[in-house]
Image (cartoon, rainbow, N blue to C red):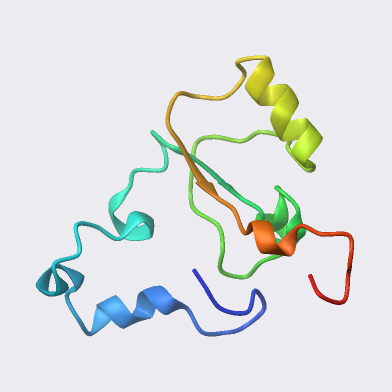
Length: 102
């Protein structure tokens, strides 16, 4: 999923030509995980609901939670409102008070 959020390029397309197993990779999470069993949370766009705006960083899933801010995420965690299996895709360097460097 890495790359510019609005780019037309999708890094997973690499695996249409190559077999990642031949490189001793155990799995490719975006291809091998069942997101109807795992909640996918990403901070794309410096928000937890950034998948609404990204053309690539989202998964098809039965799960939906209204989580926008980190405070929302913490409340869901503290309230035991999330499933037991979660893929958390976070980019801590992007979370800062300096918009230009973010």
